[in-house]
Image (cartoon, rainbow, N blue to C red):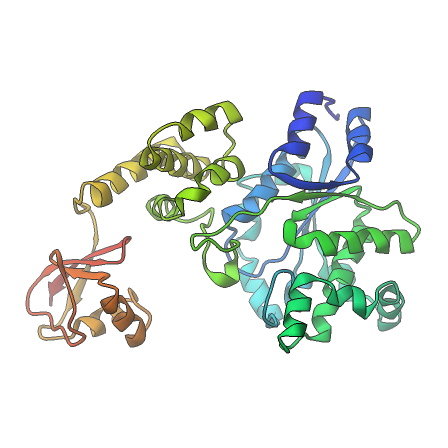
Length: 390
């Protein structure tokens, strides 16, 4: 049964929303009590879902709570093609093996936010892998090369003489065809998805179907201030450990705290404004607490906040840390690489230059530093270990 709650519907259409196409039509449908098919597509380009994608999943849950039919497309086929949206370089193709590895725990993560039992779950390889070349060329006739090159990222790459693969031009066709198959009434996406979602409307009309409404959601910046993206590694994943998640949130720019409150938490505006009225460090800690609480619970969020305060604000060392054994006179770089705490010698040297490696509270500067006795290691802001001789 669909709930017609005017206040909640208007909140859904306004909070964190950049654009609605067509807003008047969509609002009328929602207020009529008609049960809509709400589509969201996610390409498994990595093994973990980040809180930027959770913004869309939470919006999907809002529609689900009203009784609408949520239709989740897992883009196992489109992940291989590669979405060029907002990419300033040609995106490499993934193999089927890569995609299947990424999918291993994907739905269990999605299930932290939406009710999977009440959702339609589709894998678009089911129909896209069977789409004939003849059918693809018919759909392609709807679009022009000029339209494709007007996309900001393609335009910039074309001007800079950077490669644009013909394969990338097919992506919006694939995504739009998904909307035809699942009979989407509404499709949601981030601001980078506008072209793809509009393509879906055109393709639906090509097949004689009513064009879907579009809900464009604001996008969340990552820990480096750019768009949060798995391929850029600037992400806060929803299955990150509580201490790691808390620390990552604390590392974001102060200017993003308000946006994170609105996009990454479920707090109402009144409580967000109260939180933002606190001193900046306390407001950010409150934000980190709320985000950890969503995915790990209140107790874990409290422990993570205490860990952060004692470790970083009060400069205390954590009581429980991993122990790493070493051979006497072994180089510190060898120990860290062997333990997987740094990936390579070049990363080790970069961390040294940044003063990011400490042994017994002293910054290590010597790239040939050798270990003679046990001590406490700190790498960056989040990695701690006790080094013990064998």
